[in-house]
Amino acid sequence: MPRSRRSARRRAPALAACAALLGGPHPAGAAPDGPREAVAAAAPGGPRQAAAAAAATEPDIRLTVPWLLVQLVPSPELWIGPGEAHFGVRWQVTPLLYSFGMNRKLSPWRAFVVEPLTRHAGSLELFGSPEYIARPGAFGERWIFRGGVRAYFPLLHRGDYMSFSLGGSAIYARERLGASYEAGVYTLFGALGAQVSYTPTAALRSTTITLSIRYF
Image (cartoon, rainbow, N blue to C red; front, side, top):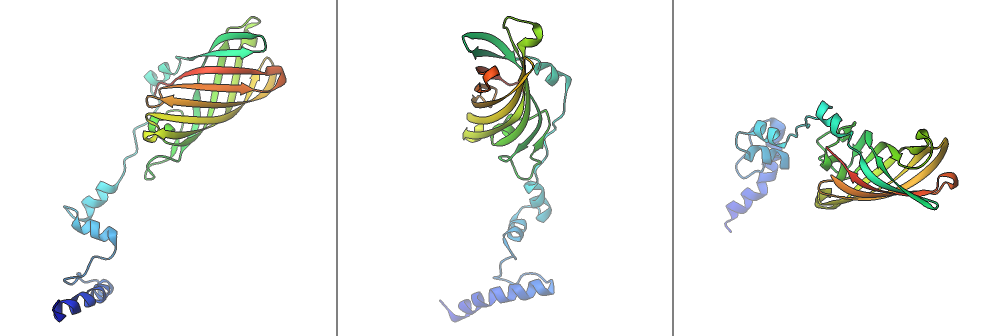
């Protein structure tokens, strides 16, 4: 290689540093200062269009009447207690969710309305879950109220194809308090899943298998 070319390559970093200090243009053979500037300089239309391309837009999420109506459709379940088993239904509500698996340029917080990707790509949620069990007894004794924390983790395709959850909750039923633990698996973008909840508290000991149906 000719000596003049080698000398020019050795001088390029020093010339680039001098040009940056003086505010002047980069000399021939010198690279822009850092990868961001290089991308901006190479992007069609200059730095403004490069910044716009890198920006992320928050989704338009809000409570609507149609969304509220479909949330009234419950998920069927089977409640199994000592020496008995009864069918029931469950509703689910998410007052607050934090997603740790979504685009970092977007807000990770959601309240009530949660997109499937935000939940099943990895998240931690507070949930409430009233249940009605078709069992003998007074009407008030047929209700179970759960409130707790649930974590979702993706298994396939960032959770769109399959994800699973682990959680725990406090429950109130028949004027008694207890604790419950659960695990679940989900598919079809989280719209369909199966949850198994176990309550070890002696007065409320039971296992509940729920066919989770979520309408987003």
